[in-house]
Length: 246
Image (tube, rainbow, N blue to C red; front, top):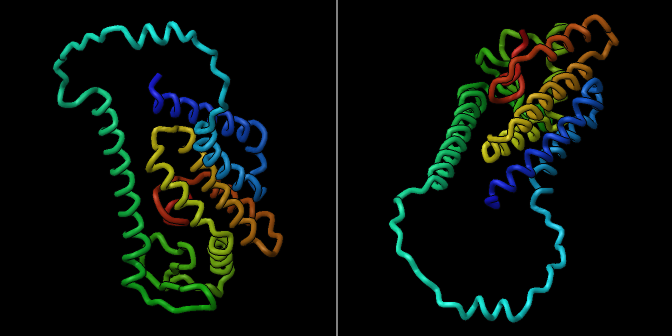
């Protein structure tokens, strides 16, 4: 088997086992912070573990056989080779898919981060930059940037919950998880388990942020927010721009 195909097979097997363990053992414990780190570690281990090889002692070969092989006359047969082999076409196709996913990610960042930041009203509050924007996807956050709509008051009960929700994303550095995951998918888009892990990781982010947003122990409100996070539709980037509540 070709070394690259062998690596991909091992990566798929490793990620499948780790994701299967999550689904069987940890899936119903989405509120735990450790599930977030488990899914991130699962992706890293799936990439690193197949690269590790345990050296085994090779059997000694007869010196006479080696000498006989080395002294045998070699016959060289010229064969016309095509300009592009099947292997080259496969690699080129995989590379084009990665380029497409990367450009889509960059376009998503431009639409939801760069453009609103350039056109919005920016003000600093402690170590967080608040950008007032009319983008329909707002409010959402990206690292230390909080994108907020001018027609949403942070003084109302609903506004306070949303504000705390987004501040949790910022404090817990959920944007770093997303950027890391999206970049991994650029290179390893062929791994279906990585897409499943990505979806679960984003849902966990929303569960954790919703739990933090309910500070008054309002069980009904928390259940409503949790239900919305569970029934999310994943887009591309970032935070609330990626996860639209149904």
